[in-house]
Image (cartoon, rainbow, N blue to C red):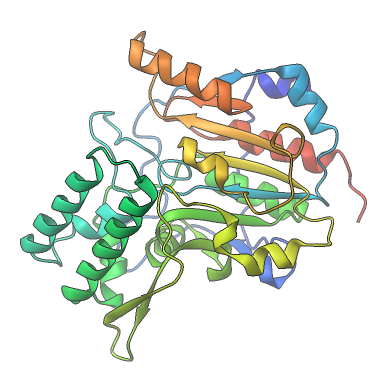
Length: 338
């Protein structure tokens, strides 16, 4: 187990179909291919030489102690999407990649007026507020309504993702493959947009059940025009399983989800497992991503220090999530019994 903290494994994800758990947790890895009218799903992930993530462990003895009680029978993986399972920056490291909302906002399929209205909401969200939860709930609902007002169509989503800069993070397929091999359920928990996330996974060679994606979900009419949004509204300040009581009931009274591996790039992601009767210090291994290189700047150093106080492990840099893959493989290897 010692080398888990000092190296990243280099094995590739197995091709073919992999299923996580029962059919309700289905998450498949498919052979990658070029999608008609779109980009190659492997899109040039070797275009830049990529440094491995720097791994910062808060307390290795405490982490080793936690790991001893984690098995493939009791663990669930809960992962954020934007800037966690997707890359934060473009290959030249100069520009941020599109998140779910910017995939739609930056698409030429919608008029400039839509982008102007959306930008006003982003500006409002950056202003100080005594009640961030209420502010962001209002902003998310208003942005959702703008997409309705401007007539977004379901059949645009494929091209919107194709023409965006979003890219699955290296290691995401291997993480899914490791979970599938160990029969470990995966939940993708995002303040983004479910249908965009599903399209991103599809174009990245992953077929995901809608039930595994906890995010804002569009409702289209029979002609494929967006007409409304399903509840709940998920934003960066309310990401908690309490929004999905049916999942809490599903896990209640079972051994499953008594341990959580949590993966996210924001402090707010630490609340994703709230609602389950778990002890953060015993039952959750929290992995935080700082999507900046250790360049000696005070900003990055302060962020790493802050995350190190809150997460068990901090991955620094915009690199592959090989550490999370090897951690999950290690958990699954501890108990091979059915």
